[in-house]
Length: 170
Length: 303
Image 1: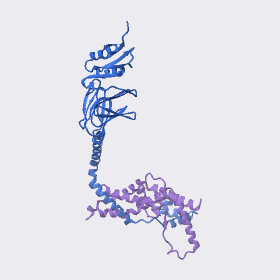
Image 2 (image 1 turned 90 degrees about the vertical axis):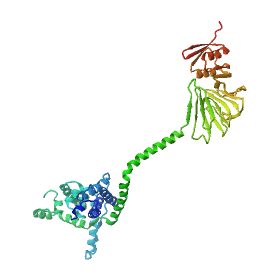
Image 3 (image 1 turned 180 degrees about the horizontal axis):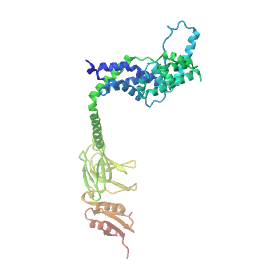
Image 4 (image 1 turned 180 degrees about the vertical axis):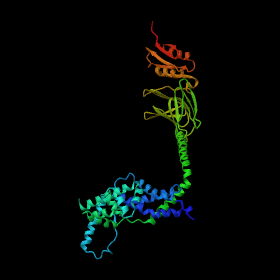
């Protein structure tokens, strides 16, 4: 019954829902690209303020694509990515029975992985992390980036290849 | 192995055969480890509520701005530019000095804001600031003018050669190329010439020719003669007399074999050209020829 009234982004509740479902990913998306939290925060704000300004023109189905586009365009001219500093989930509770040697080795591996991620091309890193951290399907990433699913598969493949090459020191 | 098999593997899209083959490869362990480690990765903290609040704040700001101000924005811009132009030109025009100029053979009477009178002789220019008149009675003069100054604050006539300061009197100032003369007809006039101040009582003149101060005679007149369409001279080099003649009659003067430095005493009419020519040529014993707007003065040969 409220399908009619829900069909407008200018509706406060609709806007909030769109924000809650997408803001974190927009934030991560920009963060993976540029490695800068401040930029990522600004991008989220900018994207949703713009969405509000254009709420009469953008349908709820198009809102997601709209915010990614705004966030993306905001840093169109920013080329240089900074170091991407990611955190690791705290596994200490699960791994109490691991030996200190194992934990040290694990830490070392994570360090290598992080360095390898930093040296990936921006589009490969973004694709890889959106998939691994945010659990985004290739199709969704393809929509965000405005490319084909095949192109995303290619990026994913190359990302894994170069991560291994760097970590194994090939 | 199919294209982009690593991506397919992550997506569980490899066939059983392909998966088995991949698992046998030596890189498999590395890939699996990368995958395991990457599952523990986390993006930086993102405080959704905080950002939503910031967005909402900007939204309300925008709302008041967009909804209420925008229709006026364009109008305000235009209005601001128009107002700026109007006010700007008002001030610009206001600061411009008033200017009165006379052509050859033209005299003009000017009444200043304090009712002081100025009569401009031919080919002269007077300028003053009407806006600042209450603060300072300053006029700039190029050429010649007769001043009847109303009583009041110091009245200053500035010329290229020197300046004249008075309180309220009648005097004549002439400043032509190389020639500077001030004649006081009433009251007291102070003349500053090359940094030196000279006080002129009524009936006396101050004259400088080519920067040299020249003694000049006492005058008994109450006004300069040119006010009555007559130009008078007392021991003035002929060249200045001829220049004045050019100005008064709008004619071009040429000379031949004449010493233009010789002194001339006399007067000529500013209205009757023929009479004026005779008045100049007779006492100086020179001849003249009038052709169109040109007059040639030449020496009378002793034949």
